[in-house]
Amino acid sequence: MVKSFLLAFPMMVLTFVMLSGGRMSDDPKKMVAFAITFLFVNILFFLMIRTGKTDKYRSILFISYAVCFVISFITHLIELRGSMAISGANMVEGLTPFCHIVIPMTLIPAALTKTIIFPGTIIGGFASIASMFVLWIGASLALGRGFCSWACFFGGLDDGFSRIFKKPLIKNINLKWTYLPYAVLFVVVVTAALTLSPTYCEWLCPYKTVTEFVEVTSVKILMQTIIFVSLFIALVIVLPLLTKRRTQCGLFCPFGAFQSFTNKVNAFEVRIDQEKCVKCKRCLQVCPTFSVDEGSINEGKMRITCTKCGKCVDACPKKAIFFHVKCTPLNSTLDRYRVFFLYPAFLFLTTMAGNNIQDAIVKTIRLLTTGSMF
Image (cartoon, rainbow, N blue to C red; front, side):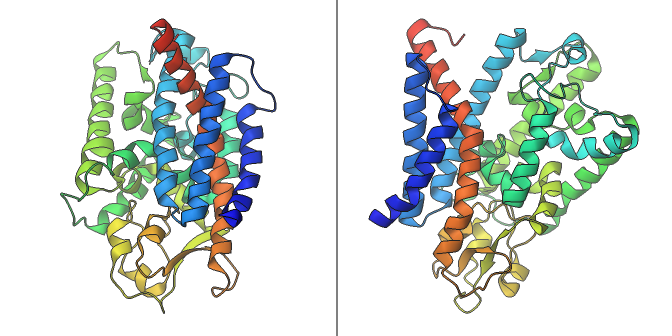
């Protein structure tokens, strides 16, 4: 108990500074929201350290973050422009918040034409392009594709739906489908470079359903809206329910495919101790992003798509799966490697989630006391 508290105490200090922004608000609603959020995240981190369970407590914060993000983001859009719909005038004014999923589509046009093909602001305003690039670079260096389980404000939605049923109704999924995100990535990057427009955002992004969408003023936009909603229902709700997997993240998202390559430069990885492994394949069954296969078990390494969620680590009955720092011995104290990973990962998740959770709490209190979130 004492050791767990001592390991968790620095996180308490860091999260206090981060969640408070360096100063305490005198607004009672914000003070309550801060206290609830601070206690919530630090209890989860303490339990993560104390119990040795990573995914169990990560998922609680990650899913809460996604739900609160939707509440906070939608209400912010309505306050900003009166609707979730964005008009042509809004885009000209640069009032579109920048999304990390656009990043792969912006790189080639930016290199060739020195143009950012997104109707947002470079700096200043809400979710500016520069701020999101800084967050993405920091997350990539710290977490690699761990971004998808510790930072992405959309990932908690399909993660949450994948946990509702106790057993999957669809068990066998051909791993060839895991190459689809790379095909989607190739198509959207090429088409974005040719058309100088973010084609994934315009045609395929399921999360338009719960964030913002172009005002429906034509048959074309109506078709795009139908596609968004259909993909959201299929990939974020229905398939995760049926498979207990993160199907949007693992079988479709082009940003996830792009982010997989950052696992090569990230310091952390998940490994399998082949001497302890009894080939029960429990890890293969529970991995939400299809990042474990027969080759992983035989080689002792996860596929490049591993999001470092820790679910396989928690599930392994022989404790054969562990977090590891690259270029260090495999026979050192494994708990130390896990803590080394948890600090940047959990702090990044809290940084991303903190303001959204606090804002959602404030708006919920406002709704309960005044009848309106605004």
